[in-house]
Length: 546
Image (cartoon, rainbow, N blue to C red; front, side):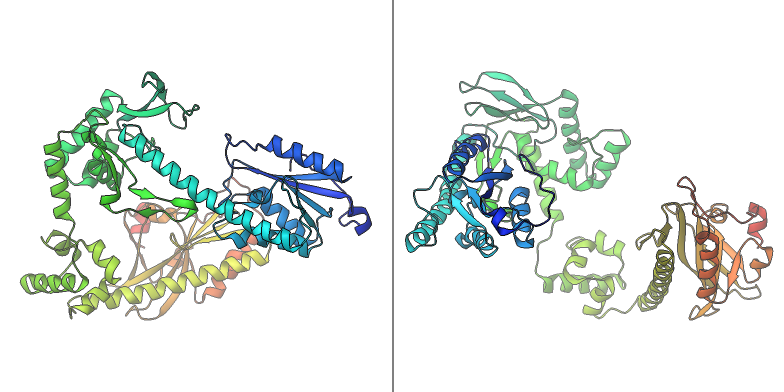
């Protein structure tokens, strides 16, 4: 904390605190007339008149007074007072509004109450009343708090009115800049002063920002995106093509289908400057405003796309978005089922007049629940198999958690990633947990399969092998993950493969767990080690016949 006096004693006697004071100063913007320095001068004068010594300073510079979030100075001050670590008996504040311009006037009173309860007297150095707990002081403080809250409301209304006026004059009022556009800084006579790059902002109140066309190659990209979409290319397809060509978006990141959709809906490309589509007044949550509240300037920017082409794009996008009640969604789905005789994700997404599969997920949850609501049981067998598989996955994640706890008891660092089903020990050893299903073919010995995932890290794989009916646990096996890379997408192994001494077999998970702990727990691996000491790895030919 700036200007704070470091005191080595954890707690001071009350007699030593009597003339010690802390000061709290806050300024929300660089343009505020009551700067940090001006507040400090008034506080210092007050302290000298009352023979107080300022031993620490808590400050919040450039932070809004609407809420306490992000105000480190006030947060630390309150925590020190509440915990009894405060080594002062007085808190000096410039005026009542320095606590904040909270819309709930009781909030600023709350922080003063915390100080007073802890025996710290709060003094407002620039106010015309003494904060002595009298009736007059209580009335004046409450009036000041209401005035501080009302000041924020009035200022917000004035700023909003000014922003509307400037938008109608063709000036940009903040927010991200669309792809292929750039911000030009102009003076009060609209004379160009330069181009603002990412992160830069105007420094003079009389300056303004106008949007102009950006780099010619980006302008051509915007035209190409609209052209391709009118050729019935999907947003995802356009994004993939842009990424394939190495073209980044306005943030320098790869394109997503959603970003392409936002670009296609942006009226800035037909020359329209829009303001107040969203609002966040007085620290509240961001809200989307209805279209009638938008402020639009029709000819503020040089257009890139012809308005007829833009309208055709919006029509296509509107037809692709079906906004209907949930009962109607289910009714249409039943009609498609009656027509097709069956349902699948592909059928739903390709049927005209139906919302996408993702829309059904949002409204009704899992696919099984959607089918249940329309009385369709055609995929019941698949659902049963999937539910059983998920139970075995949950079992393996439970085993991974048990192994993680065992390593942590030994003082090792272990983290479990449920998404990848991987346990990482000491940021060096990777253990992946998988389920191996039994494949029982007539006149052929039993074999088990593991599907290889490219995202698997190097290390070891713990697989639970299921019985012939895939209904119970047969055993557990431990193998190097390098085995799986020899067999492309699917790894096959037989009942007796452990006899090759390249795969370790265990009847119970507890035995496998003890084995891993013995291998990893005794010697701490170096940070550049990626896996356990590997067992002998079979050749591709040998593993194929295992």
